[in-house]
Each structure stands twice: as structure tokens, then as C-alpha cells.
Image 1 (cartoon, rainbow, N blue to C red):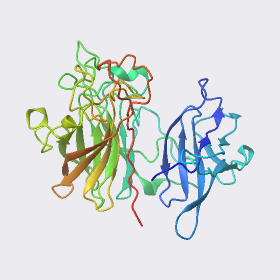
Image 2: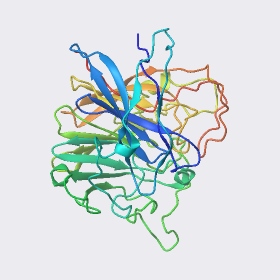
Image 3: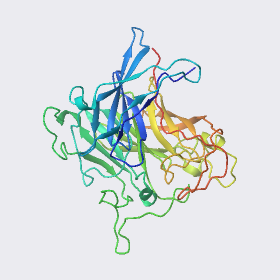
Image 4: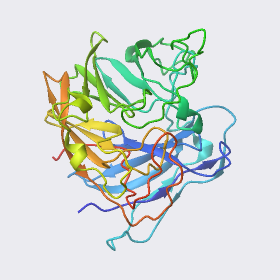
Amino acid sequence: TKEAIALFRVTETNGNANGRSVHMSFWSTDGSAILVDNLNGKMIERIDVTRDKKGKIIDLVFNKSAGVYLGTGFSAVAEATAFSGNNAFGNPLIGSVGGSYADADETPMLIVGEYGNRIVSGAGCGGVETQGSMFFSGGVSASGAGATQSTFILYALDDSKFDANNDPKENFPFPSQIFNDKTNTNTIGNSYGKVTSDDPGTSNDSGQLPNQTTRRDSHGAAVTLDGKYVHVVDRIQNVVEVFDAITEERVSTYDLVSKDGKSGREGHAGPCLKRSVLDDNDLQLNDPAPDLLDSTPDGKYLMVAFRGPNPVTVSHAAQGSCPGVGIVELSEDNKSGKLVDVLRTTNTVDTVPVGTIPGGRDYSGAERSDVHGAIVVAKN
């Protein structure tokens, strides 16, 4: 059984009038901290983790001294808090808030690189480190403007060229633009899209429905166990682009809708079809809408979050039909793969109205499950 052991509320800042909002959180590489993306607060915050000799978490401290603002002029207007009481299983929550916003230089996280959107465009969400480089994507904006954007870009940065001891220089080290799809729109900084005399390339109005849309949205990324290949999902087209981490070249593309990962919608349907939501006859089926992903410790599979018919965020690019966790079996020496199953999740307790799904189907059913990320934790 998995149960909550702590619950925190992040810092509220003057960065957004709509209060607090967390986009995501990740473990540090050594497991000593949890890094929290305070979206509305325009900052990254840190929860310090203490374990016993067996690795069990015995304390969690929301460290106010460790936060770093992602810009200038920001300040805290309400402090982070830790909740007490019991979890759903009746067990007590642990955790506290420590440090001081005034002492942010004592145990800080540091910004070691800053880039303008003419150099690193897009609104990507997903990156991995391998072969001495950080690979990260550029996708469509989460705001309403993203509904007519099409962006699939992959960048790489040389880790060895960052210098935490000196003030970072803008746009240094200069990133490699490994891939920029020729159909990308010229939006959120990109200027490499196709332009004609009749079309400035600033809008793609094809929506997000399978078999109709031509839009792209690069999102989550994962590296294979051997460190040689980076797999990047397209949340709208339901494909995975694979790149060689050494040569920085695209080596293959496989789909998440066919049984063999090669035939697309013309071939035999893959597992998402039989796992799809069936309580709305007009919902497009076999539409995984892949999001964040992770590799398994044995290197044989990728675990991929699949979005739902009523996406909580980015509804203009993330509507899917088989919410859950997709299992991708890797092949061809990790250069390709295919979807072999979907661990379906469900949530019919939530009754929040769906509203309008831009470019998709205004879903009329009861399913509210919407999986945004998958993280694999190895057993000791």
C-alpha cells in the first residue's frame, strides 16, 4: 500500500495574482531532496529528505533558504506551510518548514544558465541528461495561445561548460538544436517554420483529433539504460522520436497506436484501443496522448503517462482516450519500441464539469482520470 507521509503548501509570491500552483516535482539524483516547480510563484523550491540506515524516510523539511526565483522583482507574500494530522489511512503526517527566506544564500540552488526564447524557443516540458549533455524539448504553450501552435524541437546543452562559480552569461553555453520539425509554427520564439507568400506560419488550426490534426507537441523525454538514445514523445501525434545521444541525430520514429509500433492507424490497433474510455460515443478512441515518462531499471521498457478525456491542464493538446500508464517495450537495440499494454487508471469520483476542449471532443462521460507523469522507483 502506498500512502502519503507529508503534505506541504508552497510559497506564495507576487509572481501571480491567482495564488499558488505547483506544476510538478522531481527527486534529486541522490534522493536527498525533492525539487518543486512553484509555477505561479516563478521559483524552484526544495524539500530536504532525511532517511534512516535502511533508506526509510524519517523526516522532510521544506527548506525556505533553498528556494530560487526564476527572475527579478519577486518576493514572498505568504510562507510555505506543512500540514499536520493524519493521512487517509489514519497514520500521522510528518514534515516541517525550516530555514528563512532572508537566508536564501545559505543553502541555495543556483541558476547557472539563462536563455532568451530566440535561442531556446517553445514551452517544453521534459529533459534528460546523458553522454555529458542535457537534452530537453520545446513544445506548445500551456496557455490558450498553444491551441494553434505546433512545436517539436529538441535541444542539447554541454554540461561541462556551465560554471556555477561565476555569474551566468546569457545564452551560454550555446545549445545545439538537434531537431526542429519543418512544420513547426513560428511562435514562442521559433523562426524556422515554413513561410509562404500566403501563410506567415504563425498558426495551425487543425486541432488535436487523430486523423485530422497536423499539429505537433514534443513533451516528455527518457534516456535508455545504456545512455545511447533519447526517446521524446509527441503528445498530439502519438509518436515517439528517437535520437542518438552521441551523434545527436534522429534515428527512428515509432507510434503508440499500432500493435507493432510501425503501422500507425492503418495497421492492427495497439492496446490503447481496448483500454479506451467507452462512455462517450463521439470520443476518438486509441488516442494515448503521451506525457512524461521514465525507463525501467532493467532497461527493457518505458513507462509513459497517458492523459485522459478531460485533461486537467493543456486541454488543447492533451486529450486522450486511455488514461493510465503505457508500457513501451524497447527493441532494435533501444532504437525503437512498441506499446504492449496500458495500466488503466480511473477516477469517477470527481464530478468537475468538462467544459470546452479546444480542437478536441467536449467529452460527456464520467471519467476524470488524467495521468500527467510516470516515475519508476527501483526496489532495493
